[in-house]
Amino acid sequence: MVAAINLDMIGRVRDDRLAIFGSRSGQGWRRLFCLHNDEAGLHLLFPWGIRPNADHYPFFDRGVPAVMLHSGLHDDYHRPSDRIELIDGPGMERVTQLLFGAVCALADARESLPGYRADARYETHFIEQSLRERAVKPADRLGVGWREAASAGGGVRVSRTRAGSPAQKAGLLPGDLIVRFAGREIRADADFFAAVSSAASPAAMIVERPGAEKPLELTVHLDGKPLRWGIYWRLDEAEPGMVILSHVVPGSPADRAGLAPGDRIYRVAGRDFQNETEFVHLIADQVAMLRLLVERDGRLQIVTLLLDVSVSREKAA
Image 1 (cartoon, rainbow, N blue to C red):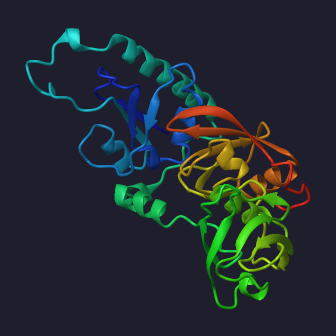
Image 2: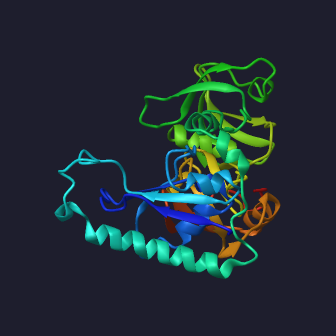
């Protein structure tokens, strides 16, 4: 026995939502179901935690990757009011479409069946939540605090500079208005985030200083490496062959394309990847456009990221 799938209460699909419990009991369960969700088009939920209160648990307890498909509790649960006319036939059909594709793929997988994960016993919703809260965000490459300028011309006005930071070393002062950075016009916060995160070092910035007759051009040596696409990610042992976005830089190509933390990237330029090294090489090879297969809540879509024309093609990913 290599896998177990339990159907328990799939007759009340509401708002297109279907929960798949136990998806962390085996490596790759989530990807398996999402890749076969096109026709069903369900909004898939993958709760963390596995409890000994359902029929799939004894399989997991004995080393078999096991999941349970469930359309959610309702007020008629275990009551005489749970009548046959309340069954959602079309919803059950969609669940069956999803299940059929996944089971056929399991039968044909042979070399890539879900690998059992005993750690799922200890993984809870609270651990998942703490991972999201501890997500890595871009390092501060410049070392300034700022606020959007109220003037019609835009820009961001420096409110403080960190001691010893690239900004202070470049001569930036509180009160300075940054109107261009690395060749990019700064109109608002998002422009500034994107420009600083993607700029090669050193970078030039145009600053309007109170009392100065004309704008100043300052050169700053930024900390860290530039990000072309504006994404940070993490890996998950239970979800091999994908990366999970942990942060999207405001104003970046990823932000403009609609990507968000929690999105899963399955393919780059139509190609699968087995590990993080392959993923990094694939995105580094893309010059001006990055085409991704992205999963969000169980649904797959192609997302295309385009570099801003003002961003150099020479920068590292």
